[in-house]
Amino acid sequence: MKRWQRALQDNYGTPTIELVSGKGSVVKDSNGNTYLDFLAGIATNVLGHGHPAVVKAVTKQIATLGHVSNFYAHPNVLELAEKLQKMTGDKSARVFFCNSGAEANEAALKLSRKTGKYKIVATNESFHGRTMGALSLTGQPSKRNPFKPLLKGIKHVPFGDSLAMKRAITKKTAMVIVEPIMGEAGVIVPPSDYLKNLRKYCDDNGALLVFDCVQTGMGRTGDWFGYEYSGIKPDVITLAKGLGGGLPLGAMIALGSASTLFSAGDHGSTFGGNPVATAAGLAVIASIEKEKILKHVDEVGAFLLAELALIPGVTEVRGAGLLIGLTLEKPVAKAVTKKCQESGALINAPGESIIRLAPALNVSMRQAQKFVAIFSQALKGVTHV
Ligand SMILES: *Cc1c(COP(=O)(O)O)cnc(C)c1O
Image (cartoon, rainbow, N blue to C red; front, side, top):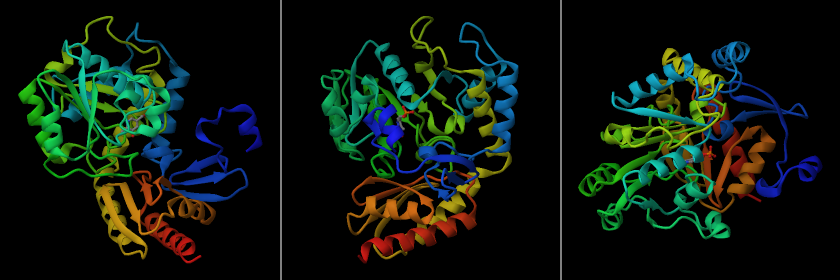
């Protein structure tokens, strides 16, 4: 902790444990303690730690060709773009690769400027990243206020409120951005017709509909993309977190007529589409398909939703697949997170009474059972003091 404070900036606060190795959903710290990893690098390590397919693909690629920039093509960037295009079900989809979620949303923001308009509608409590453009989209005052002035022309409305969106979207709106399920806000699920309504309002006003699937993409919800249940398609999908299976990789995918808004010279990233990161992305997709992980996500997710709801002190359990939010009866989320860590499970508390779980998508049913036992004991421990 002292070394962290002496060498790193204070933007994260100081972590209390140092992780040194991991296998699947188990990580080990520098004191030899092991933990069930139910946060997975913030919804990132979709195949857990050290998955053989990712290790093999990355090792082979770094030994063959490490980085080339986008002045040159290479096999992985082409193959991964084709894969993602296929997953969107839209042959006209075109992919831009970057390295993080914030960058994917920055790219969407710039793409929307190419419509000739600049006004944007986003939602309260949303999280779209920390860079100035992405932060301007983010709907959390505590993150925004210290950095004002932010971008102009962005209106925030309550999440899940179709009427508020209908009122806010006009012919002047360039884009509307929402998370299919708000992740950082505590796993907030909108009403089932919300995304469909947004599609209609955007169509009526010629606005781009952007789904920030950075957290809800890549199988997290049991589908490839978190919006699929709605039956509609957005104009833009942003991805990161799970895409690289633990390596930094992001993407902004534009569909239909949005796919040709950028022309040569409009945007770029030196590392975007890097051979090693895209090798990891290809290994992630191939393994999810081969190991039938999407079905597994539904099964383990349903088990966790049901079991967690039975724990005394839990008032609500929500989410989709393996993105799960819990509301606690008492504001003990930080304390229960600490207690879980002491008892061998890593989780996250996005609010005073809210817990977020986002384990690896291949977490086993046994590990899920073990987690429920640890969590339930931890909650009992902190609420009975
Ligand atoms: C994490 C997250 C981001 C930001 O991603 P970074 O890689 O941290 O820049 C953006 N949108 C959503 C929905 C996220 O969960």
